[in-house]
Length: 593
Image 1 (tube, one colour):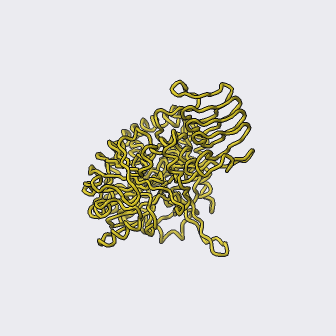
Image 2 (image 1 turned 120 degrees about the horizontal axis):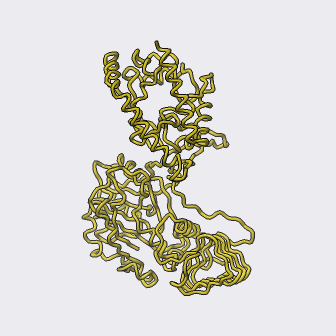
């Protein structure tokens, strides 16, 4: 089945060998093929059944329509996801499917075995900047930014894209020997992409441009992916493959349909507007719902559904058109197909029943606990702590930060030129030092300070690390030879931190919070990282005023005080830290003279 989606405002185009979001149009074809006995993992006929059965089919088609990439939580300012539009959809279906699919799809173009698709229908598609062919068996989403960046080093006329959950953030891959001994592990803190061999069958998405697009569609869309590969190779066109962090739902399996329902009823996708959920008025649809039945959690109901007394439906569950749940039956996190019947006192748990090739008791059991297949967005798996919007942390702390930063900037504005002049006279180089650090939720920013070291001091750090006075990933020396004379005075009096109030005004930092640290220092303890990155880093903090500098304890104290601050965060704690910091600054400043 083919769907053409034209995105005119924000589309994936190529510039300098890299995917970019530009205004050039992109044509997307979503190709559905009949299930075959030889398809790995697929159950023949299940995909057609799912698409033709309401309301399951409407959910599947609705989730297949959006672009094949996830919207970034923090999109690039020049790449606005809200500018994407999908003005037209064209469905090309196997001949025998056309009457089974919903009428609201609009124009449906059938095709028959051996005949392919009429080339006239595809005429002009290759003239667009990019042609994207998606495998309709999978609801596959990939990270858009990783898709673009991963494409930067791959100079190809065609790129096969596979969504790989193992490349998602907050995953660990353990490497073992053949004897089972641990060699090492790899931990990912952000979504990534990596080159892979060209897959033997249709990938989740195939990006084609220019001559490659013409080679595939001008003579009719080929059915087998190997035929597409051979056609591209015969014309000297380069085909690459890329695995990108993402998730996929296989609509050709029962597990995939359960994941589809979980995601739809979980509120992470746009479901059909005419769905009826548990607890909503039922006047729009006909059916027999007993007032003595119980519907718990999100339950999606089709037309003419019958639920008898004492039946219990536990969400997320989907009851398709004309399905029946008899008295005393329990349906837990399952999909009941059209015209299917759950017998009295039967328990159905985490199953798809009433579909071709499945039996009502196929995976159902009384008292059996199974896990609903999960669809997780990797961007949401981090264990960041969250606070109510209208609380001290959610609102008032930011207001206090801005007011404090403005007052400090006004007070120190007269002496900033003299500090800058002293730095320039003491050593050559810029006045300010900018270093990339991780902020709230891992968002990177440039932390600004007055330069206190000689130019190039950061390149000498690895050479001096063996004599560092602290343990853990951070580096500190009591008598650091890289520090200049003026820099030492600025550090002792904390005046080098004044430019960080600019970071506070920009929203990258807070007055009080964990120490701002680079990504390299945050990778050794994942859950500590997530805790400390739940809030904005601070100019001062609990660890800065409480650490003891005792040998082999600094890193442990860093973890302890950062996590303690996040647990006990309040306005009283922030005021106490500010008072202790102010007192220390006064004592230290006086001691300089």
